[in-house]
Length: 580
Image: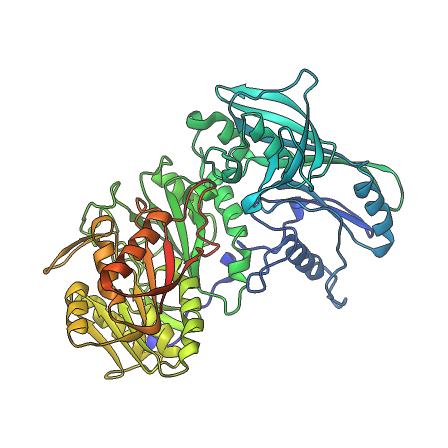
């Protein structure tokens, strides 16, 4: 297929979805001082080296790119005197020159700066008459702090926050909090201790929400070099209205509303867009976590794929909103309400072959991920040929295979189009076996493998039921250094029916029997009814059933473009199981 020789590049129109920073988020700026409105979901500093997605990096890149033509574009100076938690939004300041450092340091260290936050809480808030919360806080487990009762603690520090209720809607309230001290998690811990945790604050028992509902709305200080008073304001966004209203919240009312939500979500994927090597396909908005319940959106080069699952937002409104982003085409996948429902995935009602916006495009094309090309078909059923939530697992998988140099033997079960096998082959392993029950999918996997020079017999693709294949492999005493197990939540083949909730343990035991000593099993499930603790229990019990000594089990986090809603687990649970 000559038209599929090279991966398609991303177009400039969609690149605009991932700005380093937005001009509108600069609240004040001069040569000595800058104040910005930090979105939720971005760290102040200390970036992941692979995903440089913190405020300092992004704001610095924006300021450097804004330099006049011909001017040097060195990284601008940004001095850190204040931090906001990753999931807290609002006013954040930096010095722009070393001359500003003493003035800012004196004010922050001397607590002369007025700080005002707003939060949405749930519960009966028990406030003293003067509204002043006075507590002793001490470090607790898992990154939390604890409000002390009687007694003392060697690391206890006093925390004072003045709180008042601005608006109440049933059990929920919008509150203003003015901290007079600057302790870690001060507002969150004190409000939770008074019976009204912040929504989205899973660490302190807050009810689920699309984000942590805490926002630094005002900072009152003096300019660090001129000493003139400054009041920096940042009103909370519409997420706070939605959180306060709860079930009465109104869905987006126009394509412009949808566009704004998607642009905000896409901006939070800047770290994915700028990673090296940068993928051509990833998720730009993920359901409730991005304020779009029942709606998730994937980018494939210059096309968008929208997944709808019992969404309260009208479909046409979503499609029109996405068309405003500049994509060439928009495809739709309508997920059945119940995951166990087996549907005709290629039927027009669930997955139309033609786009719902834009002119029809090529039936198949290539996108690049982890440096390898993969064939995708955006109009071919509910899936496209590439599971985007497995991107980070494939990167980790390739790194782990380096332990075995080129001698690794890899078994990829429920392999779909063979992406883990492709990554393994590209890493130079000795052999891969790719197993799937569908003849058409196996042919697709062969094409993907051939594009990286991986051909049979060293890189075999087998059309088979995975349970039957594992039984035969164990009977032949075959062993593999790495096994990938990522079955669907529910499936039906000619030989068997599979339900992850009822059958995963038996399947994992069969897989562990063919893992060589010192090897590993990468076990995954996207069954929403299987929480991580239950999944780990399945794997422990599978090890005992298989008579295999498990040396280590390590939980693997989801990629940053598939964030769980605060207080909820990721839909994809991944555990690396090492065999002793």
